[in-house]
Image (cartoon, rainbow, N blue to C red; front, side, top):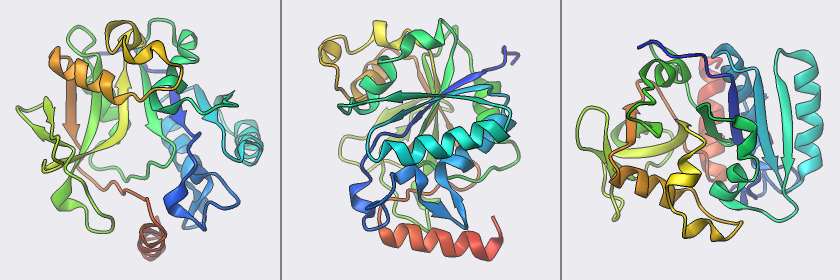
Length: 247
């Protein structure tokens, strides 16, 4: 499928990383390191390889630490990084909507700032891009099979109901975990969960649910590894594995 290049991305970087303490006592979660490289640096490297030229990052907790590092990164790499600082945290939906006008009408990548993944035959971002069809999709996201999550604990967020569509498992007994790596259109904020959006601070999940009901939520199964780095044990286990494999 031929698609125009996706040139912009939003990285969710404003969370507290409470469950990852003490590693996040003095740094925001996207700044923790796996084999000597921060999570957000790894994400930005993959975005650049996918052709992204502008990234927007929201910040809140210990914002100055991440903003300084991102300024340095942008000066050395071929990408513009824009900071959306949130004095009051806006959650996973409100943070994106806060700057939604920056994306015009074009689809863009959204990635959680603590995302950590390896690529298979094709990079995950290129796989999403090649399968994107804006005529029938509002969200195309990456799903990880729980049975293949060995280093970190998986939660059954979704089940596939056909090759590329999923249904949320309310009791968490699904076969796949949502990675929070996706492409979506800016107009999802006009089309879905309007009641939720009356508050500035809101979750993206109700938008996902309404998009699913409308038949416009699509998904791909990731063919490599994705790690849910949530606790100190997760971090230490994945760090050791990445060091062993020199990743």
